[in-house]
Length: 117
Length: 117
DNA sequence: CGCAACTATAAAGTTGCGCTTATATTTGCA
DNA sequence: TGCAAATATAAGCGCAACTTTATAGTTGCG
Image (tube, rainbow over all chains, first blue to last red):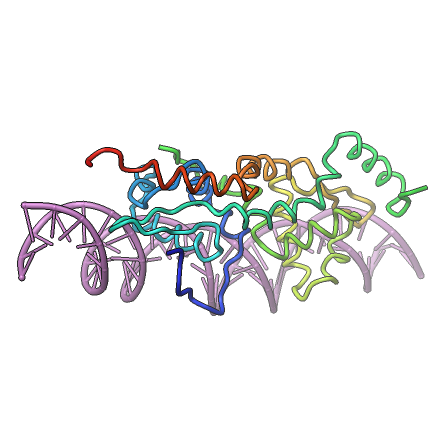
């Protein structure tokens, strides 16, 4: 069972979800292997309740799926939602080669509107 | 333990910077062409002061650099800092293929709880 | 059944964020 | 010189985020 009922009308943002360093660490951990909240909380200084809240946020934007196993719940990583970040990053990727950046600099210093001569 | 003691003043990192949709829009705009704060503010509903604050945050994590031109200031995009996000994303990219996700599933269902049979 | 383990959720406090209004500083121009 | 333009910064407000303490709901096992 993945998840049945979800609080509607309010879908969280992936970008906001990965803004918190604890949540990024949670994602890195369960990307290697799915874990229970208790096992996750042992890796951090915060309480299990705090970890549980982080997991809830990650679940709401579908970065994490849960799977019940008895009275334990294994959370595992859903990589597909992370694509959204990568797709947004796509518009910048052509700009972070050094040669292109330097060219950009020169053009900006000359005239703001003179690309593509 | 993953979480070290990080002073809250240094919590201004790239991930938090791109968490705000207005800041993401600012980055997308100046990635195409460097702009002044006034020109930027015309694209949004908020005041110029609010845009100025967003720019300050983006500058603090070096996603944006400024260049004075008379009494105007042209802000342009610094793509290099965006690499940090891409590098963090790298650990998940191999999980985006469906075939790998299914393999992960199988391993998860087999592995946990070998002790205490 | 009854208790312990595992987890979620509610409540309350503190901090941080984003916005607006108001003020200050620098530059261009008549 | 004096004023307008462009921008930054300070102060204050409302609200959302993060954490802890406390409470409640399932599940496994004797």
